[in-house]
Image 1 (cartoon, rainbow, N blue to C red):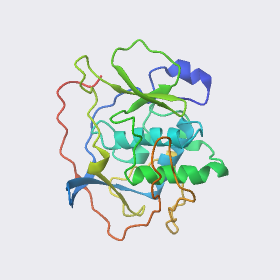
Image 2: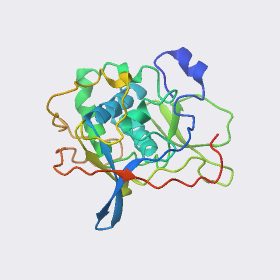
Image 3: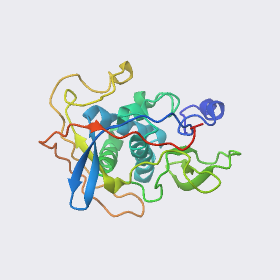
Image 4: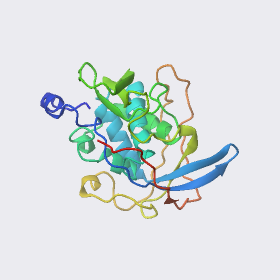
Length: 252
């Protein structure tokens, strides 16, 4: 995982997005669609801000491709039973993302592209090469572990899956993007919303919900442009507990 200070890269080595916490249940509900059932996750504007900051900090404000790759890791972790229940919970998890990730100052010129990338993730877009990847570290570093299955390099990071010798994932897998629906709710309406002083400075406690409309089209490398216009839905989905994930072996 990339850090803003070089000593952290060496000192933390396999920390950051290289460790695997214990599984926990997600606050979700099932939504029927024409093709079947989707799992709906509630998110707040604070969650969206957490997503933006992780994408910006971890790719060192690089490019849309790097933003989308880090955002895909966040989304994959959100929908895996092994990680916290909310986007801010995933980003703020101890020793997972770069130190100071929630305090990084985003440059004004980066906001339009970053907004578009965040909305793309929340609308179901994923980096095409990452698939089930939930881990990454700074590009160029080498580790002597045989379970690191590399899938992509983007934004100065190398992304990988942890796979056993038989090729199976060692981490409870995320849901495919087509099985996930993200539902915006106001801060007071969110279910299972994480509360921590770490995030208090991100957004005001009260006030109108901002319009999440991207100022520019978002077109990452080798991907078609997508519509990133965002409208706050009128119907709020009340999440229910997702069934416990059955794990065949210990997470270590």
